[in-house]
Amino acid sequence: MTKPMLPLIGICLLVGACSTSLDTFYRPGGTVSRLETDMLNCEVQALADAPVANEVRQTPSFYVPGNFYCTSRYYCHGGWSGGEIYTVDVNKDLRTRVTNQCMAEKGYSRVSIPRCSDIVAAQVPERTTTVMPNLSPGSCVVRNSDGTYQLVQAIPAGTP
Picture 1 (tube, rainbow, N blue to C red):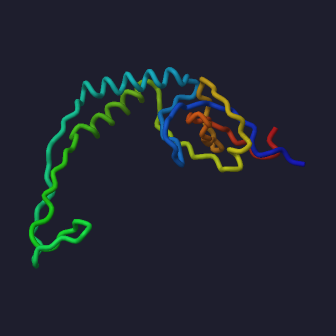
Picture 2 (spheres, one colour; picture 1 turned 30 degrees about the vertical axis):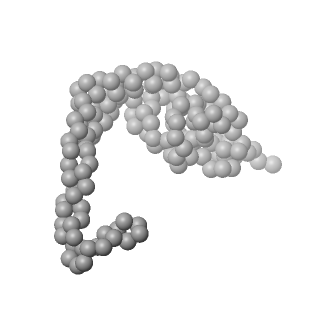
Picture 3 (cartoon, rainbow, N blue to C red; picture 1 turned 180 degrees about the horizontal axis):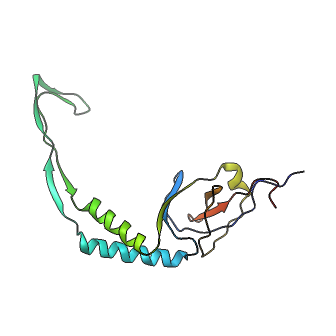
C-alpha cells in the first residue's frame, strides 16, 4: 500500500477572491501579518508618489449610413454612433510599478501558486499558519471554508 499523495504544510495567505491560482507577494520565512503590513505601507506610499489622476476621454464618433432606427435592445442603425465618455486613471500602472518596487525592496517576490486538484484539496485538513514556507514545484493552494487560502506542499507517494 502506498502513502497518499499529500501530507502538507499549511499556510493561510488571507486573500479574498476565488481563482485558479494565487498571485501574491511572497517571502519564504516571512509572516503573513508582516506581508499585510508591508503591502499596505507600500500601497499608501505608491498612492502618495503616484496619486489618482483621472482623465476624461471619449471614444471616436462615426456616422453609420442608412435610415435611423433602433431595435428593441437599443442598438441603433443609421446616424451617429460612438462618442461614449469614460475616465482613465493615467497613474494606475505607475502606482502598480511603485508598489511592486517597494515590495521588492522589502524582500518579496511576485509568485503565482496554482490551485490544488480536487483530489489534493479533499485530503487537506484546514490549517492556518503564520509563516510562509519555502515553495517547491509541488506547492499548490486550497481555499479554506472561511475564504482564506492554505498553501500545500504535495509530497509524491513513497517520499519519506
